[in-house]
Image 1 (cartoon, one colour):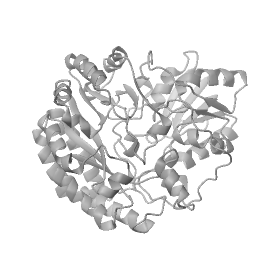
Image 2: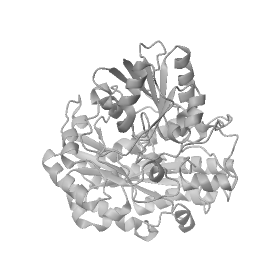
Image 3: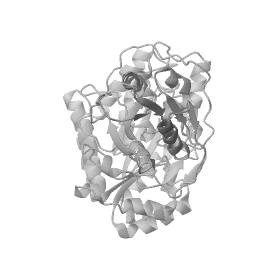
Length: 474
């Protein structure tokens, strides 16, 4: 069969996303899992048009909630042309009956590794079931992603997964319900993917982007991996928790193995907000100290901040830009609190009647407001976030962050230069996060089955994104 794996996208900035740094691992991972007898294409709608006259027999759509309206539009158009449509990803996992009601022939719930080949066999025989429930699988013998299927519009191409899951349970994060537990790939398998070097540009051969929720959660594992990476002389980046700054041996290995950047989910500076987010692993008073230790090892710090917790006021949100400068963050990522299904936050706001029912799924994209905040109105929260964004990426603040990062290692400096320059250019040209238009929220058409398997945010379902980083647009 011919199979098109499509990652739907809805524009999130006023004038689009001019530079595309890194692709999600989703599509190229699923393509690698596809049996060799099938021909497969991977299409990222963010960088490529969708052609409805495709010769594909099966269309696989992976999407999270913010892109659900577009995914359903694509499903309808492909179904109208006689294609078999299979949905997957975080949204389809939690809202499987809704996906089936929107012209999807089948939904994969759980890990694609366990059921993808069977779903394709069934589709080939004309015996496709409505739902496929993935089972937990080991991470052994996962094939190298199909980097050859990536379009040429991504600056970074070597995205790798070494682990799945995160030991923490942040209230706004769906990873604990999508991917309970923590699993690790064999180090030798990860090294095999790192050694893949068939890329055009030197920086694509140099860079390794770990698409993990928390790469460093198991110290013995990550230290063994980093020791083996030292001779490879790569630059790499990932996301982790702030507690790594207390492990000097790990920081030394990160520097020696070529780490250029780490994303920390700091989320907020308010004590009440941190308590609401269940971020007890963070302590505000050591943010600065931890970031200074990262800088001492030449590593840039990217950090995620979320606006809209109960303790936030519009003034608190806007002044967050000053606190970012004070603690030394090199690249800030600024989002709006979003109640995704599968999180304690969603359950809490739903029970309190604070979910805004007139907001379509496109508001669930991390840059718009889908709930009623406690200390302000929804428009006030949106306005405060936009003011924070403009302040944090003013030309002067961008220039100061770039200048400060010049004391880091070369890769870290180039990372800071590229990302700050990117967002600074957006700020200058007025390409701010897009205010979504109103559209009724899709109605759940039946009971949502709970996923019963360990799942990874970017591998859940048929094809799986996020990242963000799950809370960013990395």
